[in-house]
Image (tube, rainbow over all chains, first blue to last red; front, side, top):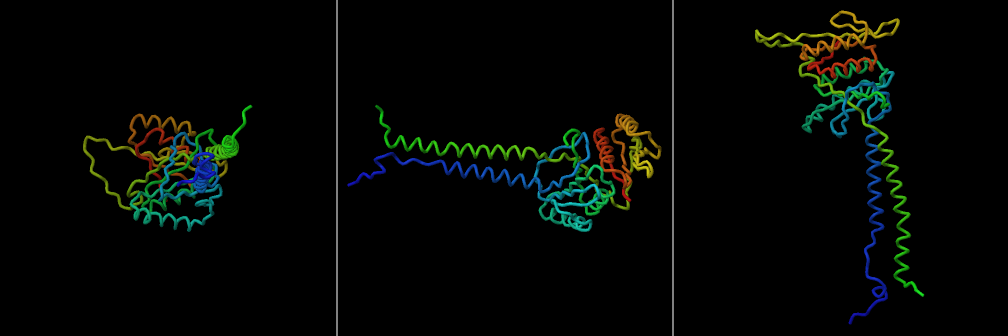
Amino acid sequence: MRLPTQYSQRTPLRFNITPLIDVVFLLIIFFLVASHFVRSEQAEPVALPLATGGEIDNEQAPHRLTITIGEDGSLFIGGESQTEAEVKLRIEELRPAADAAGVKPEVRLRGHKDGQYGAMRKLVEHCAAQNIRSIRFAVARPGEQ
Amino acid sequence: MRIPNHSRQRGSLENESMTPMIDVVFLLLVFFVCASVGQKPDRLLPADLATGATATTVNIPEEAPDEFPSQEVRIRLTRDAVSLELRIELNEGALTGARELKQRLERLSSLDPDTKIIMDVADEVSVQQFIAVYDLCQALEFNSISFAVR
């Protein structure tokens, strides 16, 4: 014989969605914050040169090296200051890593608009010597900065 | 008189506890969405280096007799040591400024977009000046833009 309990007498069992919504929103916030930091990790703040052309590329390529060149010629990779020899070593490591993955390596140069072209030229020449053919110059549209 | 039963009390309590939580979560969501929108990704000017650009030996292909070879135009950018002004030379001929360079390149582009542009930029020239000329060449849709190496 089934004995009615006090609980079943009150209301039928209901699914509580409050913790579910809580967890889902927390996950959304976590991924938003994580993507924000991933994007800002590559972007050492620098005044980019102005150009009317240029396209926005949000694609996350795994074998892409973003090098920031400061006004005084200082070099940064991933927000960390690097010597010229260290940067050249990273460029040299890019080609075999991209070949192993079967993708085209790419180097993005973010040069300060008042910096000297010489620092950029050395890196472009080193990329060409390492058979890295895809170079991108980061620019800003007038009025965007 | 209407007497509230036990289950109705419980239901109203549940609603009251959920509303501020959803409010706060939505506020946090809006905040982070706005914060992430504030950071714009860079615009990129492509520069695909041709294969063999650094080779020391160059094989010149035989041209068909009825074809005119595409001419080469060398843009030299230097910076005056005293006045620090940009000096522009087009095929060794000095230009008055960026406006004249633009006019000359526009004419060249309309006549022959296959003209090979060679950019010979001195190290002391600023990145902005180099990008401005490179951007101009790309905007005029020249098929071949090269960088001189030292």
